[in-house]
Length: 321
Image 1 (cartoon, rainbow, N blue to C red):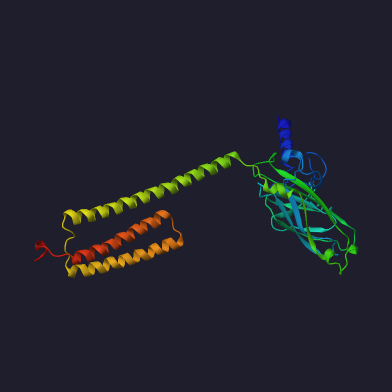
Image 2 (spheres, rainbow, N blue to C red):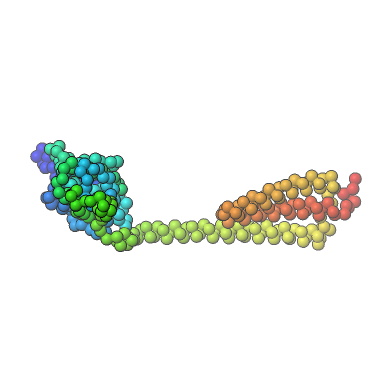
């Protein structure tokens, strides 16, 4: 029983170890296929083969190094669908790496450092510092493995990885008069066109379509509701005025001692609503809010009009004391 449990634990370790975007960082050697991860890749991802769908880039790289000089490398992954992933970069122990935020020095199982740096958590746009050797050792070769992951638990075929190899020339190939050699460069591998050809997720497309339908229904529903309400209110006011003048003898008389303060109050209200309406239109407020403010403004202005008409109406016998 104990031997079976031990076997399960050992197999689990081997299955989980070779993950480039592992939160604990990728392994130096690839237990799935043998060899170094920076040279063979992470064969447990993306069907076990490199993919040009992920563009692996490193910038800030000199054409030739100066003795003991430090350079800040920026490592970037680009993918049409995935934003984060992991990396593993080595100079095979020639220079010295200083990890930056989100990165770490790679160690082997015995605690030794093979001269490599990796991510410490799935992310992107890492900055690591490489210090050139203090003596001329000739050209320095680098290998970089980058893996863009889909965010699902564990390694799977949805992940994509790619490999990049480059070298930095020895100091003897650099001259101070050669501006091209002094300039830093960006080195990339992968198909940039693939970044614009993301596979469309049918569920995401359907969700977007449903959201658009709901938004149109809400917008048009508000449009029809508030428009219909405005028409009904205007019709009611016009109908009331018509029946009052035709069958009621016109508006009732309002004494000037009451009409003046009432007209002032309604005038101030009309002016305030008019200013708020102007702000709503200028600020691009929703159609329903603008229509409601417009109706309230018209209602207040109609109140001023009613006050004036009632003040000018002839008094009837029941209006006199």
